Length: 362
Image (cartoon, rainbow, N blue to C red; front, side):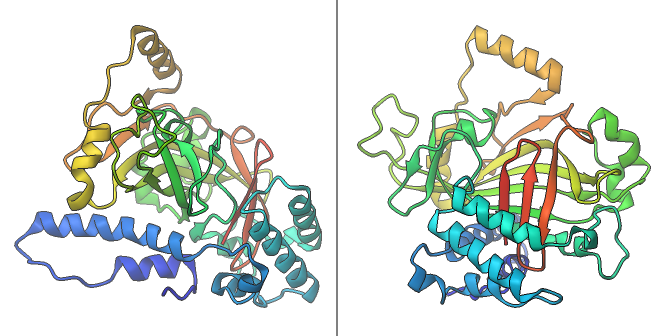
């Protein structure tokens, strides 16, 4: 049983667990390291879900963490925060319901944004100091085209919708166990290694004019096995058992110089990788091993997309099963792609994207 203390600490604990290995078997050690990393996200996701049953929710460790009294918080904020978490649990993470939107408005009306400034690092009482760490999404995934839920209550999507059509087969049905957002400062030396930056932000990033943070999106997902809903032509037709995997989208965030709570974001590429390389590699290669050659019409579309955004789609698999794509000309820039921090304390973060979507994380 996992005791919920913080998402960052729990993942760190799993990553640093000791294991038996032979020092001379470098490949086995590297494989185990990769497994521990992927296992950490699946483990935390599986043990940190809000119960929709109110009787169970009040004794839920995650609920207790989220509703515990925070320093400098008021009773009114704590009450509004508890009401919001309950609405989120009841809705299954759906942030579009009128009751949840009302709960968000009530909480943010009590929140004082003057104590948050993403542009400053040194102020001791700056709420932006809480931005760092690994945030776990409590709201449902924001991918388009949700297909419903599986028997475990997990949301279903096609791989194409999850990855912006970067990984074939696009119609592969997957369930999502959890999504995470690691946010960390990027040092001066590490800035120099960043290759893919929106044109309007290159000078700001390279010269270190403002704070730069990682803004990766990590999704723990499972390829669903074939069932009665899949015919012989389905991408899931040859999947005989669940295959756990991890999808990572690598991104960065810069504070908007003109708005203290706004993070301008961009993404430079992403990967998908199988969780258990020993158990599932053969099944993984059956799904992804022979990447199909796209028809001429699709090739032309890919070429136009590459000229515009510099996208290099996944076209080969690495030895460990990893598939990767890069965005050499990423979209972004202040006022174009961003996330506004509309609430933040030590345990809860609420973002509003540039299209108005809400993202709630613990």
